[in-house]
Image 1 (cartoon, rainbow, N blue to C red):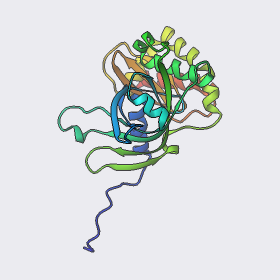
Image 2: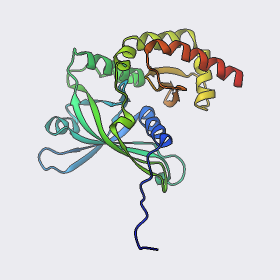
Image 3: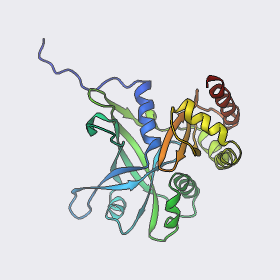
Image 4: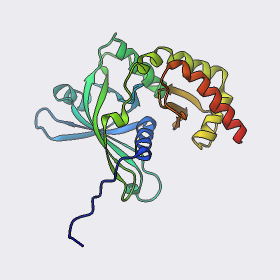
Length: 253
C-alpha cells in the first residue's frame, strides 16, 4: 500500500452516459439551487422539469418565486435530478447538473419549442403557462456529476448529455406531427415500446416527445425512457426505426 487514496471517480463510459440521460429525460421535477441576489447565499427549491429536444433542461417559473429573480440576477445554477425509491435514498441514482440559465423570450422559436415540449410532459401546467408572470428558462448544462449508487460516481461534460448538429432543428420541425400521429393511430406500438424496450408495466402509455437518442413515454405520473438502437442522423430515419422497433418487440413477445 502506498497510502494513496483510491480514486472514487470512475471512468465515464457508455453505461454511465445512458443512465445520466435516462435520469435527465425522465425527470418530472428537480431541486434547483440558485444564489440569492441580496446575500449570495445558496437557495434551493423544487421546480417542474422537462427537456428540450437536444437534452437541455427546461423549467417554467413565476416571478413570484424567489428563484426567478435570482436567476435573472445571476444565471449560474445547479439542478439535482433523481427520485429515491424504497430503502436508503442514497442508494438510488441521482444527477447534478451545473448550468447557465437563460430566459426564453415570448414569441421566439426557442420559446415556442420549449412551451410545446414542456406542456407535452406537464399538461397541467397549461393552466398557468400563459400567465404574464411565468417564464420558461433553458438551463444550459456545463458539466454534471452522476452518482449511480454507492461506489458509482462519474463526472460528465456537456457533450455527454447534449446533442448538437442539424438533426436538432430538422427533427424539431416534424416532432409534434409525429407525436400526434403515433398517439392517435399507434397506441398498440407504443405499448410494445413500453413493455419490450423500457420493461415498463402498466397501460395507457403515450409519447411525450422524440429526440435523436430516443423517446419519452408517459402514463399518468409515470415516465419511461426508450432509446433507439442507434441515434438518428436524419429526421427521415424516425419512421423506419419506429416500425423496426415495434416489429422486433412484437416478435420477442
